[in-house]
Picture 1 (cartoon, rainbow, N blue to C red):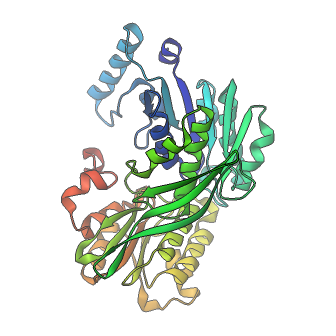
Picture 2 (picture 1 turned 60 degrees about the vertical axis):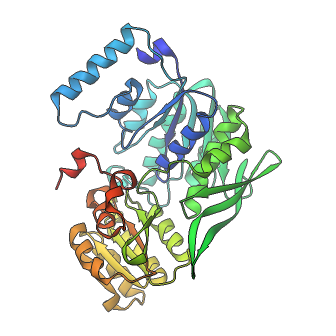
Picture 3 (picture 1 turned 30 degrees about the vertical axis):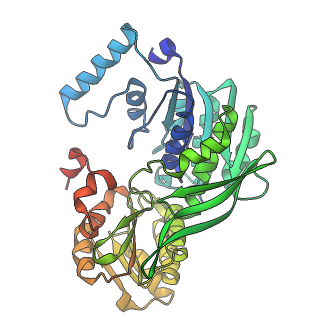
Length: 416
């Protein structure tokens, strides 16, 4: 009823890698020219999406908060309300039918599918990767006749969806055959005393014969570039100035826990990627750890990757193989992550440099006294492992946790 009354235009974002970063980047770009609302936190389900449309937060376990949400929704329907011109909605697929259901009632003006990866997250509840790709592809069914599909052209499964839709399609990515292409990426540094402190990344965006330089501060790794490219693609579709679009992304507020640089105690540097994890995202985080210059050791603290089903052992061992080539010290958290330790040992990492724990708190208590000045510490793991507790324990300014770390609201903090 709210959508029928106010008729906002809608961008839907699904995929496996970078959904949230892509959603946030698109929000920044659209806000240059329009009033816009976006999904918050993990509100990307059949319950969270309606809450975003209403403009409410989750009621969690509170009856009164849910009652308030219902009444507030009725007020918006009955009485005139200043409603956003655009909605940017992140659409998740934990189980078969999730995207198909959301697409059955969401009229999308723009549908975006980010990378799926070789072994996507949430594959545990699907027959195989192709089954999950089919589910994600249902977002294209929600496009209105004049709608545009924007696809990650570097992901083979996503790129192959071009023939599944009659709508206008734009591909983005780092490979040369994409309509919106990123290239010439590098990490930028600032010299401080005898150190080089990483500031962010720079790259070039090529679109429709135009080349535009771009910077993003406070984030690292190639996997942040596709989010910017998707946002530029949306700017192109909406006729928003592309230079201004990229400028808006230079210092926009990146979501906590997505490979953000945080000052650590004892002059260490933390790469906080504690929001969630999949094999693809973990691989890219390790690439970032490998690429960024560090005065001291490179330490990887890696937690479970959840919902991988029959791929669990193999994919964790592959992560360990990669970690053995990247880090000097490896700490794993969780039962599944012990296979990461196995993979690292089997690929030449010294056993004395590998330690495994069942919980994030145990890992935090172990690593804190071992930190040395100049160490660079990657913290990465699935939501269930609560890796942000490690970051909290080793950050230089824990009083800023509410602004810097993921899952700092009272409902999460009250959980074991």
